[in-house]
Length: 320
Length: 224
Ligand SMILES: Nc1ncnc2c1ncn2[C@@H]1O[C@H](COP(=O)(O)OP(=O)(O)O)[C@@H](O)[C@H]1O
Ligand SMILES: [Mg+2]
Image 1 (cartoon, helix red, strand yellow):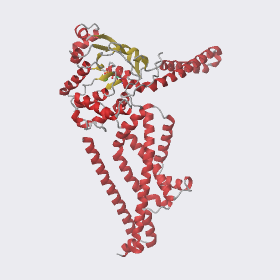
Image 2 (tube, helix red, strand yellow; image 1 turned 120 degrees about the vertical axis):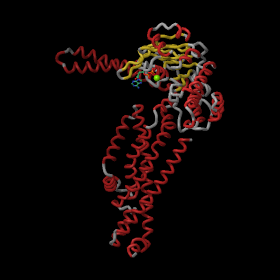
Image 3 (cartoon, helix red, strand yellow; image 1 turned 180 degrees about the horizontal axis):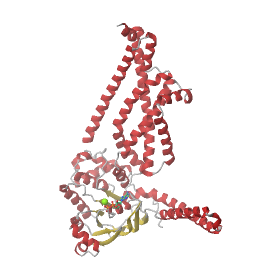
Image 4 (spheres, helix red, strand yellow; image 1 turned 60 degrees about the vertical axis):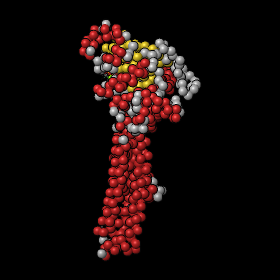
C-alpha cells in the first residue's frame, strides 16, 4: 500500500506538484472495480495515462465510461483496485473487502451461538479471533482513509473535470465562475486570477462575456467557460465526460476546436465521447470498454482501421 | 358614530392599536429571525446528513424537534412555554421565543426543500475543483438553496404575522388583544375587531406586495 506523502507546500502556486515530463506516467489504474448495489459496472479496469496523452474513451451507452472517469477524481468511490496519481495512491480499497469479510464472520458467529450446544467452543473462538483481526485491520485502514481524505482535495485540484451538463455556478458571473476556486484555494491572487482568466476567455472567444451570468450564454459558450474554469486551476489532466452531448449540433464544433487546441498545447486529456472524428484526429489513444473492462487500447489508426475485439468491430460498424 | 368614537378616539385609544401593531410586528420579526437561524441550521444538518452521511445523531435530534413542533398546536406550545418552561421570562420574550422555535421547524422544511432543489452537478463541479465540502456548502449550495427558498420564506413570514394573534393568551397586548380589551371596556365588539382585521389585512397586503417585488427582482437577475 502506497502511503500518501505529506509534502511541504512550497510556493502557493505549486501544490504537491511533481515535475512529470511528457511521456511519463501520470495516472495508473489497476484492477479497478466499481459496483453499485447490485450491478457490477467496472470489473478490473487497467489503464495508464502518460503526460501529454489524449485518450478518447468510447463504448456503448451504460458500459461504464462515466463511472470510470468519475472514479479518477473520486466522485465515485471504487469498490476495489488502485488508482495512483503522480505516484500517490488516492484511495484505499481494502476496507470494503474487510467489511464484507467481517459481516460474514459476524453472521457465522451468530449462527454458531444459536446452536451453542452442538458446536465446540474452539470453532467459536477461532471465529472471534478472526473478527478481532479484521476489526483491528479496519481500524488501521480507517486511519489511512483519513490521511487520504485529507489529501483528496489536493488531488482533485490536479484533475480537472468538464461535465456533459456544464455545471456552471448559476449565481456567479462568468468571471466569478472561473476564478472562484483558484482564489479560494489560494492558487492565485484575485487580480492574477482575473488577468489569467480574461486571457483564457479571450482564447476561447468569450472575453466580452466575463461579467454575464451563465444563463445568458448558449450551451456551446457555457461549455467553453467550463473548460476555462477547469484550466484556471492549472490541472495536470482534464477529464471530459461527453462534453458535446448536450449541445445543439451547430455548437459542437466550437467546443471540439477548443479541445483540440488544448491537446495541441500539450494538455493531458481523457475524453469520453461519441465524436469519432475527434477520437480519430485529436486523440493519440482510443480505448473501448466492454463488460466493465478495457478490451481495446490502441492508436486511432489501429483502433478504427484494424480493430481486434469482436464487440468493438460490431460497435464501430454501428457508429461509423 | 358613537361606536366609532368609543373604539378609537376616546382616551386616544387609537394609540393603543399602534402599540399593538408594534408588538405584533416585533414578535413576528423576532420570531422569523430566530426561525431562520434555527431553520437554516436544521436544514443544513439534514441536508449534509443526506448527501454525505455525516451528522447522524444531530440529524436524529432535528427529526425529533421537527416532529414535536410541527405535530402540536402553537397555542399549546405557547402555554407550555409561558407556564412551565420559560415562566421566569418576560411575556413578550416568551412569545418571540416560542414562535421563533415553532417557525424554525417550518423554515427548516422550506429551506431543506430549497437546498434539495440545487442540482447534484453543482456539488460535483465544486468537488472536482478541489473545494472542500464546507466551501461547496457555503459558497455554492447555500446561496442557490436560499434563492430557491426565498418566496416560501416570505410566505412563512406572512403566515406568522397572523398566527401571532393568539399571544393575548399569555397577556401580550398585540393587535388582537388590544381590540379585545377595548371590547371589554365598551361592551361593543363590532368596531374594535373590524379595525384589527383591517390592520392585519393591510400588513399582509403590504408584505405580499413586497414579496412580489422581491420575486420580480430575482426573476430579473435570473434572466440576466
Ligand atoms: N449512482 C448509481 N447508482 C446505481 N447505478 C448506477 C449509478 N451510476 C451509474 N449506474 C449504472 O452504471 C452503469 C454505467 O453507467 P455509466 O458509467 O454512466 O455509463 P456510460 O457513461 O458509459 O453511459 C449503468 O448501467 C448505470 O445504470
Ligand atoms: Mg455517461
